[in-house]
Image (cartoon, rainbow, N blue to C red; front, side, top):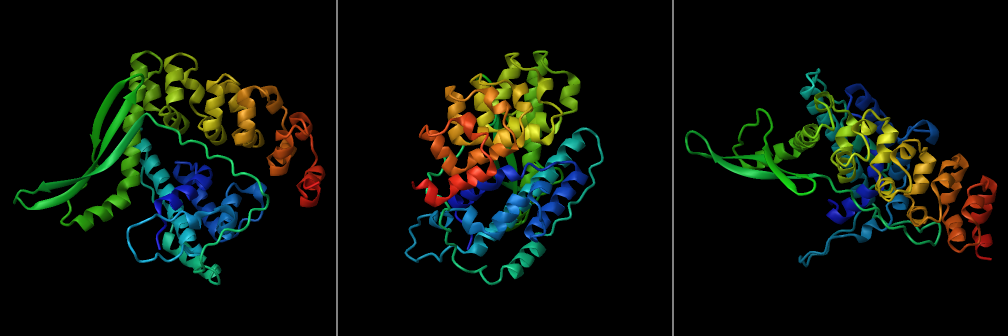
Length: 396
């Protein structure tokens, strides 16, 4: 049974951060190969592969997607719906991964074509084979009802970070047209809505190249599902070009900047904060171009943008953050502490890898109750953290 939109949204939020995929063909194929390894349970070491977390989610979805079985849509139908199964969730994970890979592939094709580079590339990713292999590996419980495992600790679930708004939206519109013989045919296109702050609105339309009308609605809908990632990439390209053209008119970017758009800049320029910061000359456009993949992921984080905007640290500080420091800042508890001034940027700057212990629910509780200071907690050894995490000790 297909998952409800609420179930899909919950899973998306849990794993979205794992899918900042490259658009360069060779790098994307390497990423696809690693994702296949995750579905085959072939990744052995967390430190050596960024998709180890995804593999753990696939191996034990009932631990990582808590309460997903309860997020079933309420419908008027009197017929009781069959329960969500583990296989339903795993099937969606394969579909979500496939969608993300297609989006990255389409994105690369659009922007390489605009820069007159070679675009002939076909990603080697066989969704059906991966799903079939997964069904065989997990045959004993693939069709069992999905029942969330008990949480390891009795702590409150942190609130989800808000989804970031973009400076453009679009919808795919169905068309009914008549051919030369006045026979009704079916097609579709995208309507684009771009906002240039503070209040300039620009509307545009985009059609796929060589897209012919279809004889039936079913043909149109099948094509739409297959081609939407490419259409979405074309929409994004139009939005980015429109925004950069506006900044060029104000002499804030060069003509070359519009022509050679890096991956990081085309993603970040559509976020209101960065566009407005460049327009207000708070930062320069070059500060969001040609970033490393991790720097790009850091700068698009809601928590990071929020703290930069509130002047808790600047963009250069954010670009120097380590993975551990980023995780601490993105934790809702520590984010609130930094925003209120109880934790300063200098405290974050000295965090080391051992500081991942700060994410222990029990350590957070101790800091929250003023039983240990943040600077003492961040120096806690792994052994000390394991002692604190012991249920018998924590209940004392």
